[in-house]
Image (cartoon, rainbow, N blue to C red; front, side):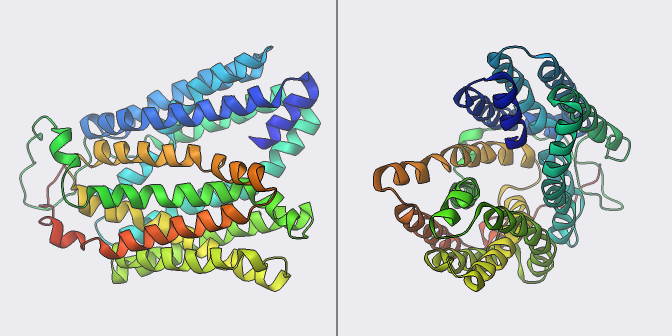
Length: 377
C-alpha cells in the first residue's frame, strides 16, 4: 500500500493523512468482519466466504481504479477490509488447521510462505507498473489478480462444513447454538487471546517504524529497506522450520521458544547500529515471527476445539486486530515525547516478556479439554 500512497499523494496532491486513515479503516473493518467470516465458515465451509470476499474485493478495486476524490479511497477500503478477511489467509488457515490432522504446523508454514514471498516481490513489481502504466491501470490489474486467485482456488477447496474425516464414523450432528459467554470463559481462551495480541502489538509496530529507527542509529534507507525485506524473507524459512519443530514438540512449546527468541532479538535493538548485530537481529526476528505464524493456529484449535473453531478464532483475531491497530501508534507516541525510539524498544521488550510469561503459565491444551473426537464430513 505504501507504493500507492506515494503515487496518489504525488499525482493528486491528496493529503497523506486521509490516505493513511483509509488504510486504517480497512484494517478496522477487516477485524470487525473476521468473526462473521468465522460464522460463515462454521456454517457453510470456506467456499461461501471466499466467494463473498472476492465480490467485495472486485467492487473495492473497481472504486480505486476510477476514484477522483480522497474520500473515495477511504470508501474503497471499507469494502476491501472485509473482502480480504473473507478471501485471503483466514479461511485458508482455518481449512488447513482443521482438515490436515498430521503435521498441521508444517502445512500451515508452507501455505503462509506464499504471503512472505508475495510481500518481497509485489512492491517492486507494483512500482514498476505504476511507473509504466499509472496508478489507475495498476489498481485495475492488481484487482483482477486479487479476485481471480481466490476464485480459482474454490474448485480445490473442500465443500461443506470443515470437519476432520475418520473412516467408519457417522457424520457429526450440527452443533447446538453457540453460547459465546461460556465458550470465551473456557480455560485457556484468555491466555490464547493474549498470545495472539502480543506479537501483533510488537511485530507490526516494529515493521512500520524499522526504517526511521535504523536511520536513527546510523543506517541509510537502503540498508533499512533491505533489513525489512530480509526479515520477511527469513520469516518464510521460520514458517517451515518452526512448523516442523511445532509438529515435533507441540505447538505451545514451539511458541514458547519463538517468544523467547523474540525477546533475545529485541534486546539486540540498541546495538543494531553495528552491521553484524543487525544481521543477527534480522535472522532471529524473522525465524521467531515465522514460527509464531505456523504454530499459533494449531494451538488455537487445541484450545477452542473443532465445532466452533472458525467463529471463536475469528473473535480472537478481532482482538489481535485491535493490537495491530495500536502497534504503530505507540512507538510514534514515544518518539514524539522523547525524540528517539528508546522508550519504544523498552515497550517492545516488556510486552514480549509478558507474552513469554503467559505462554509458560498456560497449561498444555491436552490438559485443558479432551481431545476433539474424530468426525467426518
